[in-house]
Length: 100
Image (cartoon, rainbow, N blue to C red; front, side):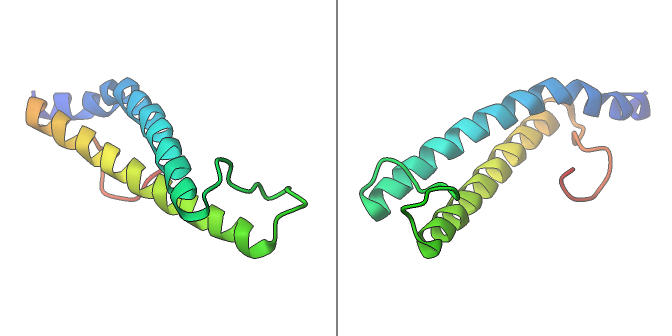
């Protein structure tokens, strides 16, 4: 019985994982905008195709944005997985490994 439950949980976790992913993206975007405002005192971060911005500024913005998104996504994913494990007794990932 426990084996059957363990096999079905990752599929059942998918809708929750989707919602957590969407919310973590929104939260990370908000955190990046606040961080960029604190660093550069500008509301909009540079885009790679912004002709008026230099390489350094564009790469700095991309590096900060990537770090924030990765950290927030990992925190939200881990929190969701721990909550599922606490409520069901089963870890939601079917096997060890990296993010797909």
